[in-house]
Length: 610
Image (cartoon, rainbow, N blue to C red; front, side, top):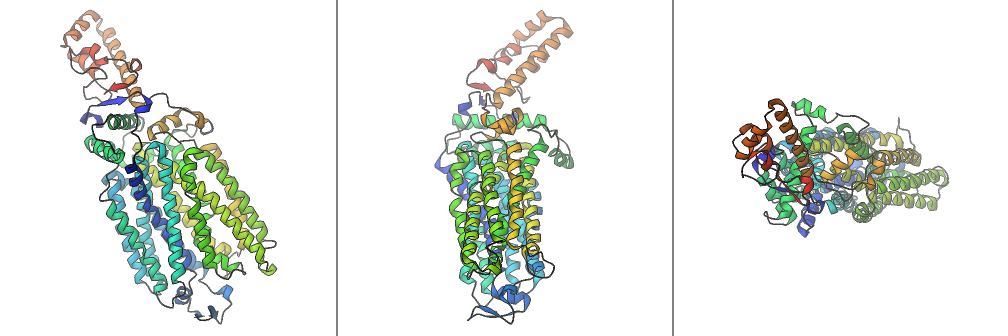
């Protein structure tokens, strides 16, 4: 058992389970959030590059007049990559991230969160090299994106895990939301780079945007050599001294601080509690354990997996990445927009400026509120876009005002997403899993995100494309996204609990005791340390009664206990919750059952020793 390495006191007082928030905690999480740049930047540059004249010419053979800025011998509406090529080049990265996310959880449990992210940065760099090395070689370009996707899968999964485990509970939602903010910044930076290179008549037009990505890998990989490992990872490995050092570092407190002792005690107690609930089995069995439990119980592993995967699926099915992946080509098809690259830049800027609102909203309004009402806002805006698009906004209607109205509604839709579903989906999956399956739970949920990201990247070009075999839906596709947002709203209402202001350990208890719809009113009543102390005390009392009944020599037993010489009674009575022979009460003394109980945890308002 992990706590056999380090006896210390733990809190029964709920106010003592975490140190005050410090500037260091903000800075560490803010730096880790930079991992979102990988996801965002790739989304941004592939959107722009697929619409670049030079890139289209390179892979199709079409001619383009760079002075007059129009294609030669072909209708501008048809000047573009085939739907199949766009689908493959876009979706293959998501395929790599899907497998990377699944693998990353196990690797993070084996070698640690920090080192897994660094390895992800290295893999990502290899993929970038392959993409830059390709010219008109589709296979090499696609393979490079697959490898880069594997690295992004590592990073996107473990960054959420790492941030959730080190962030203070009072601002955890805001800090994890910073990951989504970095995604939006990455998209914006990519659009700025693409906007500056779009008219180049050489390979620099697409190689420069790809090459800039090395900078994000260098910054994140180098910085993580300095940052500490997650204290919860050390607890899981039984390395409590290392856990105490890491926790003291991220909380900005001396290692001797009572805050550090109390918070670490609660983390250990929660881990012990979960280890008793989750059966220890083989490697395959440990994966199967992620899907154990009843669908009716909110704290079962299968319900948590459904919660995490469902959130990530519905986040993608809001259609947001259709705008960021294919926005440039979609705006080109509307017919009245002279500079679709600039419109894509505007939509990205709206995304960036809106996301910081979630930093406050996620802690003040809560997770459930944002998800439910954010979905409502997106439903309204997407239906408006679709209705206008099939009436006044039709290409043959040639109504620039109607198209501008559509773009305005798309921007408002982005606002609703950026302040609600964008950041909150990541916040919740970092909070909802217990420690024994947390890395795999986050990995499975993130893989689900990338799976649906891949599906959208594959099918969207065929849904709106005008090449042979495509549906050419145009703005009608927003009827689909709006309808899917209805299901995302219902999912949030029935299945997402409110987690704001709770520690990761308290969230476990909340999910065990109340349904999602009643979770907002739930308040913690005790700590895991006190709960384990109470349970162990009851167990010790029952053991004493069993021995008493079996031997029918209560007087002799009491005499032996008072003298400290009756070894069997001492072993039963003095055993702490983790089995290393220390006590809940006063250590040492005469031994025996009386001293082993020390003080009952219910009689102590502040501290339980274990």
